[in-house]
Image (cartoon, rainbow, N blue to C red; front, side, top):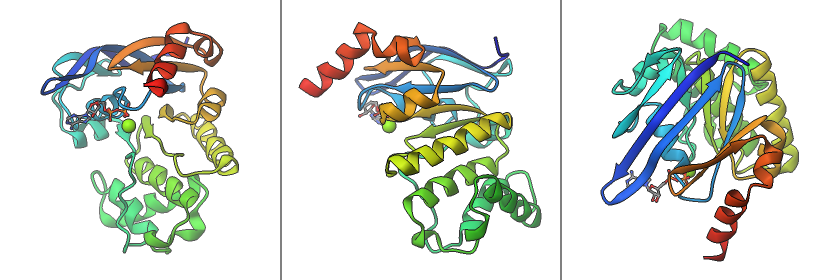
Length: 240
Ligand SMILES: Nc1ncnc2c1ncn2[C@@H]1O[C@H](COP(=O)(O)OP(=O)(O)O)[C@@H](O)[C@H]1O
Ligand SMILES: [Mg+2]
């Protein structure tokens, strides 16, 4: 069993009358790739936003290496080692790839250091050659990698990916998953939200399923695929 890196316990989050998360608990070990799935509106993005400090949970604790992060600002949580990419990519379109990526490093480094770090991060995700390209001219696969490079520039221990593969075709997804596995080999821990089942099933050794803000199942992809509550959650929504 890997060392638990992230321990999330009893997280609740309410938006007005909507209970977006109820008593969500999960543990992620160092070097794991955990998939977080669930129908639209299940609370996946809300959970990620809560983990990285964009929302303060109403209850529960979030521990990274034993340290409780609840109440810390996002930049403090990033400095502690946890960041997320955004579901709808918001790059500075008129800036270069390098400038977009180096913003991730400015928190802890001078501009010159951040630039050097950004170049290393671009190399790491296989796009060193497009450092000077304008963000608006990127293809979807390039964009997805730039997002990852920008997150890597904060030097995370755990990276939360929110539908980073949404715009990719099957071949592009396979290449992107090869990158994620490589990052894992390099010691990064990942939680991946993805609605492409084929991708998530092949990438993750463990899945967590949310439905209406509650964790309804956790297990290997094979266990999840035949879990009646999970099948019901997906069929129930699509039939509604
Ligand atoms: N900032 C917010 N204010 C109010 N309701 C929100 C907010 N963000 C998300 N929600 C609601 O919370 C629920 C979960 O949303 P979300 O976390 O985006 O789901 P998912 O990412 O699983 O599709 C949805 O019903 C959504 O409408
Ligand atoms: Mg979402």
